[in-house]
Amino acid sequence: MPFDVAPRSLASLRAGEPAEVQHILFDSVRDHCAHAGLREGSRVVGRGLRGSDVALETGTGTVVVLNGVLARFVHVVEPRASHA
Image (spheres, helix red, strand yellow):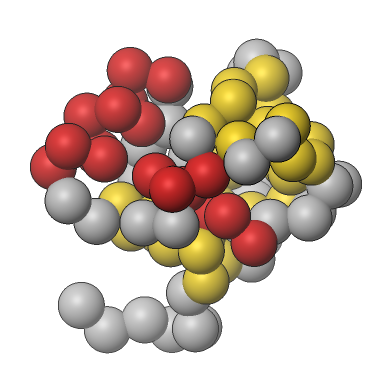
């Protein structure tokens, strides 16, 4: 899959930093993320770490806590500009 920009891991997202989920590796991680409300294309904002877990806020304002190991398999990029 070609990337326009270099992806990085959701696990590296800093508090207050916006990102867009570009790709979720592995079906089991994708299923877990979907259950938490995260999908490829989801926009999120980092809310910091909670132990080894990653806290983030979704576009709907929901705070999601994702296991830090699983977050390593979620590629994020800077959010693209809205077409509003």
